[in-house]
Figure (cartoon, rainbow, N blue to C red):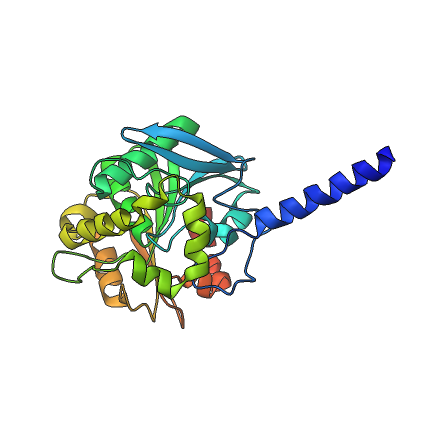
Length: 286
């Protein structure tokens, strides 16, 4: 009788684990795209750090040279970096940060800025390591990476930035709403809202991100101050951050490399991970 109970409990635990793994999916991916490890909601690797007015969630995997992952905004989450984490964690210490207002991180009370997000990232970095780090940022995370590299040159060894070009007020109008996002990818947002500590503030998140990018300037004044080597990447069919603006941003960085992934959109790493990884690997090894 006892053995039957133990067996039943074991089966329930397996089913619960499978169910937990399937709660996280990537934005704009088929519903069956799930990960063996629930990145962004993994109790075995998850930690919190207080960064001024917000509690920031992050996960740590592997050992070695620290590499910080900064995901995209709004539709972004740690799970979009699943392929990167899988490849990196055998040889690197991966520090995957959930941006404030995303995933399990709080939004905080102060208006969103790139400086604020760079400070959040450095607060987490300091909690994990005293070494200099490699930073990999996508889209919104790429802009945060630019600011992080400019603000903390002594702590950023090199950077990989995907889909983050020049931006200035009036160049592109940001007016996306939570309702629009839900209509575009309801399953993704349903699972993200379950992770958020303040799901009732999701519209506030969209408003603050829009205010940030409608008023921010990322161009020569910032980019020319970045000292470390930077690999700037883009998909050649990126409609939001066209290749021309991404290449223009790269040209302002003194020590830059450029990689354009053909036949991919904004998230080139999700559209064609193999090609993206093939471009990144030599940069990591140098």
